[in-house]
Length: 285
Image 1 (cartoon, rainbow, N blue to C red):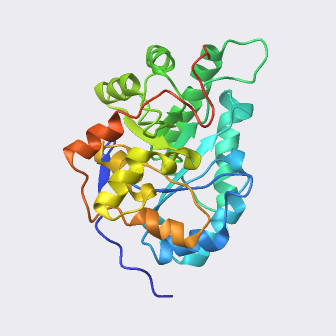
Image 2: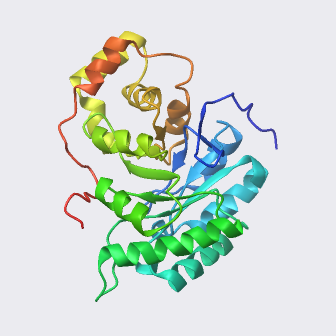
Image 3: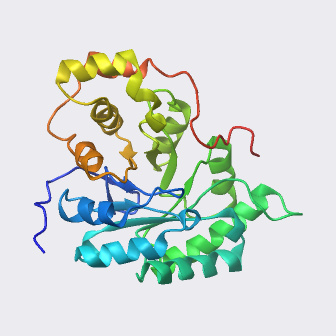
């Protein structure tokens, strides 16, 4: 199989020295996975960063697509996430090993706690997060996970984890788009050496109809999606748009040959209204 030429795309350095590609392909449940789309992304678009989760129920399918692509494992960045139903020391270790088995790999490049709330009755969220994180620390030291992180964690959750454990998360993956810009959290992460990664960069399509986005897209002769993804990347945010359509995946990858002006960045930065298009962890202790 002839592989697409892999463009020299930017990567962001983690605190442990690993380089995470700044653009990835997200997967999801409820029709959010396509075998052909993943193979296309890897072989025709040069994508080398794939994000999934046990919650999405597509680990086996993803492993099959990766094997069919023929891309060497060492050339890929694979992120997986631990669902709260598997929180706790023993359960987390077991779930990670089982996820590796389902995907058909010996390690994940990044393994994350998916959500700050625990589902374990009788224990505080903080206690369960700390116990679970200690399991991830061991998996990291054993090489089963080359990096470990969290998703949807706010500053207070990260502060508690820092007090309770020894390894600071390498990544925090949070909803991020022009309507949802958690700048206090971003600044905290950067201060602590935590790479900030954004999901839902298109706000589930809501941002594609915004007049400011449309105006900037027209100015640059680009699509609204490309403008939003480019904005995230120029802000230094690792970005993982999701799509199961080949033409959209190709479009989303074509964001490295143009630059947004300072005025564009400022205009998009002014669109924040605090809305969430997915889970909102604001009230979780």
